[in-house]
Structures are given as structure tokens and as C-alpha cells.
Amino acid sequence: MGYCPRCGENSAFGASEPGKRDLRPRALRIPAGSRIVNLPSDVQDGQVIQYGGSRFRVRREGNDYLMEIAE
Figure 1 (tube, rainbow, N blue to C red):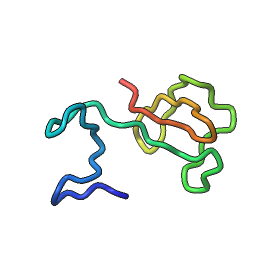
Figure 2: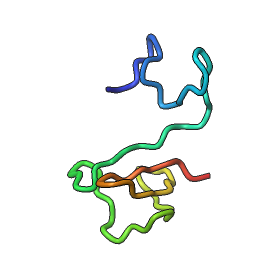
Figure 3: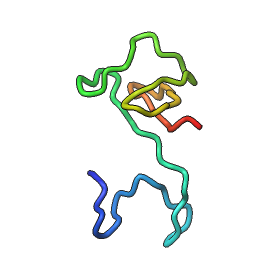
């Protein structure tokens, strides 16, 4: 589900305590065989890549890639 700007449900930011927001963005979960997000086949764990105008740190978890904003 996507983010609802009206009620704030499914925010890109996690909640560490009920009613409070954690300002660290959640990792984006991308299926390894995704036809929408084309990642290079030789991506290493911890590698920083440029995608959609932003820099992401990529990790592999099972059959998914986790992309976190790189600082």
C-alpha cells in the first residue's frame, strides 16, 4: 500500500514508539526479479548505487533487495 497524505498511514518513516515518528526512512523492498526496478545483476551487498536521482545503499535479503537512502 502507498502513503496516504490525508491520514499519514503507511508513511515512508517508521514509528519507534506509538504516536511518534522515527525520522529514518524505511528501506525499500524490491523483488530480485522485478521488471519495474531494473538493478544491475552484479550489485554487491553494501554497494551504493544511483537510482532515480538518489543514492541508495543496497542489501540482499532472501529473494529481495533492500534499498536504503545513502548519506
